[in-house]
Amino acid sequence: MNVEVIFLNSIIILALALISFFLIRTLMKFFREKKRLEQKDLSKVGFVVDTFHELVSKLKDKEKELEDLRKKAEDRATAIEGYNENILQSVPSGVISFDENMRITKVNQAAEKILEIKREIVVGKYHNEVLNKPVTDLLNEKKLIERGETGYITPSGKRIWLGLTLSPLKESEGRAIGQILIFTDLTHLKAFEAQLALRDKLSTLGELSAGIAHELRNPMGVIAGYTKLLSKKVDNSLKSTVDAVSKEIRVMDRIISDFLSFAKVTELNVSEINIKKILGNCLSSVVGERDDIKLNLNIDELPPVRGDEVLLRQAFTNLLQNSIEAMPKGGELTINASTLSDHEGQFLKISISDTGHGISENVIDKIFLPFFTTKEKGTGLGLAIVHKIVVSHGGRISADSSEKGTAFNIRLPLG
Image (cartoon, rainbow, N blue to C red):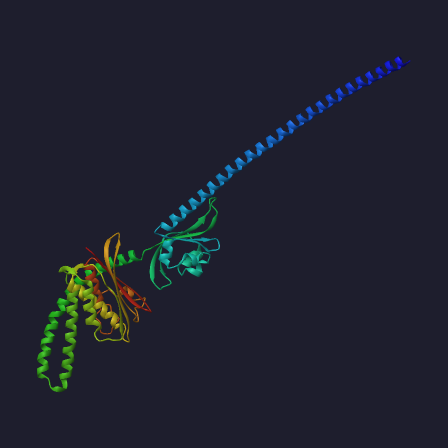
């Protein structure tokens, strides 16, 4: 009985052991399979994560490339804008652009200089707040203008002559977005043309004057002779009348002498001239004891000029005398002299200005014409002779005048 029990117990134990073995084996197999599946899942997740990180890295690389491209594009746009701005500021012609509402959007340096405006002040303002007529009228009409010409008065009162072009400002698609005004200062060119025309007129008029003067001088001499004889024979009651006739004959003789001086061909006795010394001597003789005239002189360190000292002294004396006579109650007489260079060569520029009553606008273009005068006892040959002397030296002379006074500007070539 005990043996059977022991055998039965042994079989049960063996069965339990086998069951446990198979159970443990099954569990181990299950866990291995589970672990394998988990590792497989983990490898899949890792692949996805690695792929994600790789894509992120590539996206960052592309983002960096795009950022570099964007920066290069911005730098290029900035460079092009700067280059265009440099071109705009470097051109010698004035350029002003306007938007559709006629507000100023761009102004270059030449425009600032010619029109006497400041870019930082005028940009953003309406055109009629900055510019004067007739330019504002042309802008309001919005017409296409090619190679037009017009007069203009700057804020300082300076009269200039503009050659201008006015056209619509268009975008790349051709739509008008404003207007653009391009202009040049033709003042010096116009003055040069006027000087040439005046020189031709003076040449013809000089020949005519010479003929008239010679024809008048002979009968005037006869009249003067008879007047002297008459003065010896008339009684005292008529002596004052004869003296008045003699005085007028002397005045006429002086006028005829001026005619002959103007008509005479100018022959220069050329030498090196100290302009400062000549101007100083002329001032001493003209100003004299006038203590109500304030002198402002800037004539130091001037190079010598080759010319006729006598004729230049005559020209400067005439100009200074005109300035002094324009200030009967006193004022300021200013003389500036400096050297300048342009495409025509080197010049000495001399400016003689006063604070007198000025010359009216309707006659200033005639002051260098012979026989034209605004003085009661003038012959009208003073400034004509000055003009002739300056032109004979290869120079130019012009005048600017306003209510504040008159300035005569002379250019004499150096060398």
